[in-house]
Length: 369
Image 1 (cartoon, rainbow, N blue to C red):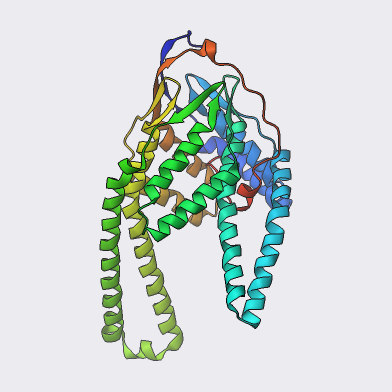
Image 2: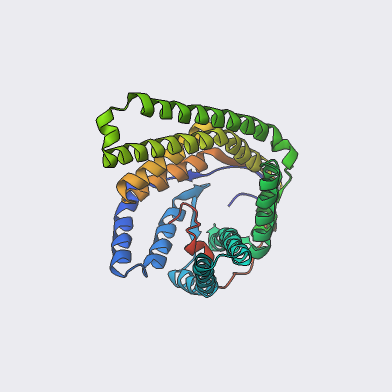
């Protein structure tokens, strides 16, 4: 352990290899299939234990102390919330189709918003559970704060963002980052965050302008495709309804892929600036975080696109490759330095309770299984 008051420079390393995780992944995947999905809670726990140990700081790996039983009982608790809501939603949907009315439509919309709210609640509940089950050198991380409060902030912020054409989003992202940081501790020392939403606005303005450009290009592309189909597709193809439908569907998918891909690529610039900003404005006592390696739009696109292609075309069989790529990406880019007096850091009380609950239903998870 470092001496009290010593200057410390931390750089996380992920030392895991895909071939080391592959046997465990295939074994737990097989058991999950055989048990019709029930084993997935214990599978997730075993995968996290393996991954956490290979995230190394100052020569010591992290430790994951969660259990499969906690995740399973958290799943059951969340079921008590989601099942009645899902039944109510589909009942209202059927009633609205049989006898459409304004109030049924409004009720269906309200239930849909409730699902969105629960998704946001689940995202923070999952983060809180994982942090509360993580230790380094025997000292616990702790994440407190109400998931319901976090969900209310997020939902209200995204609704306001919609009304302002997205211009409130930088303020919301900073507000959520502050909520997460200020409700997190390592031992007895709390994290802090000093960012301001206004400082992210230049990056958002650029992204917004580029989105307008993408939309104009998209409109031009749609016009050109329509003209091409009208003038260059052979008559016998037009006469063949099935072939024409197949070509039309393929064109639609291609155009939508290019559109959403273009939007994501544009916002990769803003996301890169946002991630860097959040890292560099987070502190743990006198320890300041920094981006050790630039987070660029190209690097984010390469990471996400590579993971999506790997996941889709291998049907999750190469999940260990995704883990290695993701963990190495972030470990290489997050560092911290400053004065740390470990003699003043005391252990926090263990947090009891069940697992992630809603996060498991919405598949909200870190790249940890």
